[in-house]
Length: 252
Ligand code: 13P
Image (cartoon, rainbow, N blue to C red):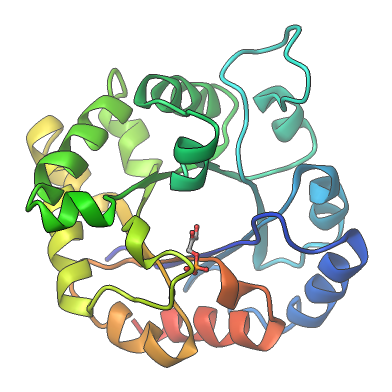
């Protein structure tokens, strides 16, 4: 049995006041962490403030970090700092970072290794563009991402890792992948993990779906055999909506 994980990716939304208001209003209502991992990923400058106020069942994630320990990298955030302030998760390789900040699979792979060095759980994002899907190349594309991004990791690490399958055409567009399409793609990712590692690793790793997940579609997505949770943008910004999503995961 894999424990579901729902992570809100707030992207470049919410001021400190808005974020703390959210945390105060969900803290007592988030279901017990024995049933679901509930995470919010915020902008770097307010991570510490949220960590200090997170309730027992809420955890905080960053949206990116550098792969080196320290150095002259203006504007970057280190894993050491994230660990130091109590951040539990970090999103790595989101398609927006790959597209707008030239993040390569090589950098993504280094960041995952770095996150593990500091005991931070990476949420690795993979997923194809509309062109790739229409060309019938989704499986090969996503497989290549998974192979490159997981290079050099041990099976014990991969069991801890979370993968988010986020088809780019479904992000922020209101176009959700059908539950069957999302489940098929996630099964494909699990079989790549099986080939690269072993059965136990493939059956343990949690793979989320992301792309226009909201209260209206989360139940049917989570009802699928291989979808272990969701990485949610827009619908994670509102406290009531976030609570609906984490409670839906409890039923899985
Ligand atoms: P939306 O849920 O807003 O489509 O965003 C998905 C996403 O990119 C989460 O990382």
